[in-house]
Amino acid sequence: MLNEFDKALEAYEKAIVLNSELIIKLSKQQNWYPLEQWINNLTDNDKKQQYLQTLKRLKDE
Image (cartoon, rainbow, N blue to C red; front, side):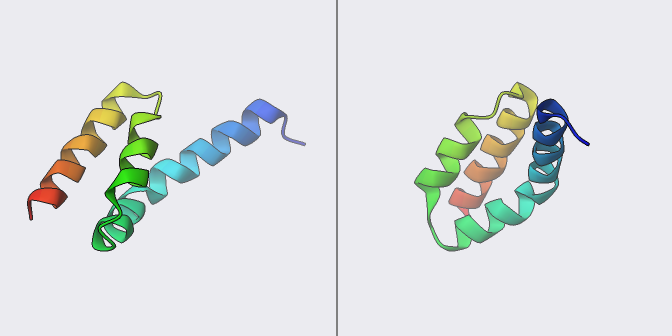
């Protein structure tokens, strides 16, 4: 049985895999604010910067 940490880690890993789909889906809806909030709440600064750069590129398109 997974403990709470393992469950949280598993959820985080799934979120990382789904992030590109989430960015594309939300950007197509022009729903930038929730996406920016989600990105800014990430604890992994490398991923945060990567996602912010992707978001900026999508906004510029």
